[in-house]
Image (cartoon, rainbow, N blue to C red; front, side):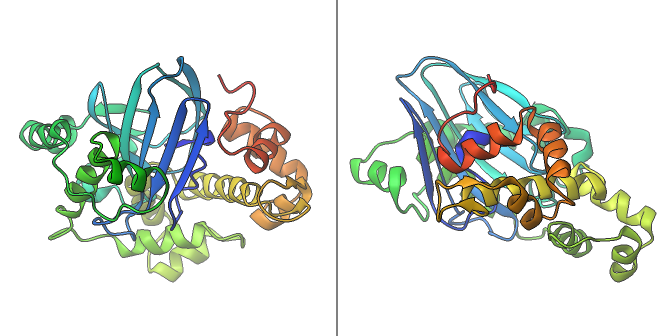
Length: 306
C-alpha cells in the first residue's frame, strides 16, 4: 500500500517528511525490525485539516496499520484506489517489502489478502492483537532509531502519538524474527523481477531450481501477485521513483520536470507509449499528471486523485 503523495517508494533508506497544508506524512527505515524484510515505518497526521482523498497505488507491499479503527493488515492492491483521510486523523504503519509479509502472516498466503483490509486479530489471533493494541494505546514503545524531521521534533517535545506507535509496531515485528525462515527463492525472484533488465520466467525458474509452475505459486503466495504482475508493478514504482528524483528531467535534481521518454527508458519500458499505458493502469491518471506531480511537488495529491 503506497500513498502516492506520501513520497514513499517503499525502498527508502533515509527518513522522509512531506506536508500538504495541515496534513503531514513521514517515514523512516525500521530501527528494530530487519530492513531486509521491512521497507519503512511511517506516520500520517491530518490533525487540523479537512477530510481529503488520498491516492493509493499498487506496490506489492503489505502494511500493518494503526488508526482510530484499531490495528489492521492491508493487503497488496491490484488497482489504484482513493482512501478517505478524515480531519483529525492520526495513523501509523509498518510496510513490509514485497514477498516478506510472511514475517507477520506466518503460513497465510498473501494472495488471500489482495485488495483487503482486515483486523490484525484475524491474522495473528485475538490475544496477540489485543496485547499489541494495548501497547499502541499507551504509547509505551521505545523510540527506536528516530532521527530527523518530524520524528526528532516529536522526540524533543516529549510528544506521544503516531511516532511512538510506529516504534511499537517496529519492535513487535522485530520480536517475530526468531524462528521465522524467509523463502530465499522468493527473495531472489523479487530482486530479479525488480531490475530494469528483461527477465524471462523460464530462465528465472531454472536459475532458482524451480519449475515455472512452482515459481508462479511461490511468488503468488508470498507477494499476492504472479511474477509478471509483480514485475509490472515494480517497474511502475521504478518510474515513479525516477520521476520523483528528477531522473530524465529537463534540469537537474529533484523538482525537475521528468522527460517521459527518458523515464521510460530508465525504468525498463519498451517506449514512452508503454509507460503511458502502464501508468494509467496502475494509477488511473496520465503520466504527465502523476509523474510530473511526483517530481515537482511530492507532498501534493495529483489532480483527479480524489
